[in-house]
Each structure stands twice: as structure tokens, then as C-alpha cells.
Length: 195
Image (tube, rainbow, N blue to C red):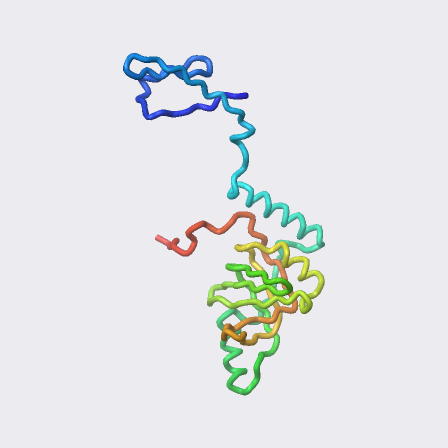
């Protein structure tokens, strides 16, 4: 048991503190209030405090898979905008998908739906969606997919096609971790701007 200080709206010159007991003087009455609280109950981590711990555990899991979570280099062939333009050119020539492309960016959304997942990846040129089918990915990429969080930087290799909802999407064959984010994105990341 330990003492936890409690601050009241009463001005500080009215409060007196004696041996873990606070005395409040209210219209000539002394009310004896004890604030003995078990700190184990008050020190439970909140959801936001658990996020770095969970991400550190995922980092350890990635390393246990034999994957370097911070590789020294990654070669991309296209950025997101170039991949979308490549799809538009392929569609003009009558094809439904493009040649294989390699893109890289930050994961901004992660949607899992059973055996398939969609990641929204954003780079300096824009956003593109990744389609990840569990039976289309290699074994290492499948294991890596479970450890990806929003804010991580990933690389993807595959062909670009258009989904039924007309979204340009990469049918990913290989997924690569480029940088594991240990902190979540700021809560209002969409509203921040340089001053």
C-alpha cells in the first residue's frame, strides 16, 4: 500500500498534510480523508501504453522468422503514381493487368478478411492498395503479414490490376518489411502540417 496524492479544488493554504492523511478545512470542520490506494490497481497499463510493448513483441517475432526488420536497402521499380499510370496504359492496350512492379511505402490501413488482406500503402506520390491472398504469398510473406501494423514501411512485388470497385491494386506475391514502427502514428496525423 502506498499513498497517492489527491489534489482538491480547495486552495493550497487550506490543506494540511500529515502522514498519509489529508485534512481539509471546510467551514471550521475538519474532514479526515485517507487516500490509501493499492498502486498495483492504479498502475495497470492503458491501451495506448500497451502498443509499444505489442510492437516490440512483433519485432521479436519478425526477427525469430529470420527476417531483418530494418534492411539496409530495397530496390523499387515504381512509385504508387507510376504503378497506377502503368495500369492505365495496360488497360488502353486491352490488358487487365500489368507487368510485375515493386513498390514501397508506409502502411496506412490494414483490412483482413479471412484468407485475404488489403493494405493501403502510401509513398511520396500517393496511395495504392495491396491485395494479399494467403495462397498467393510465399511462406515467409504469409508469416510476416501477421506482424504488420499501421505505420510500418513495407515493400511489395506483384502485378497491378483493378478490383471490382475500380481500385488500382497490386496482387502481391512477395511482401518485404522495410522498417518496423515501434510507435503508433499520431492520433491526428491527418491534421498535422509543417509550420
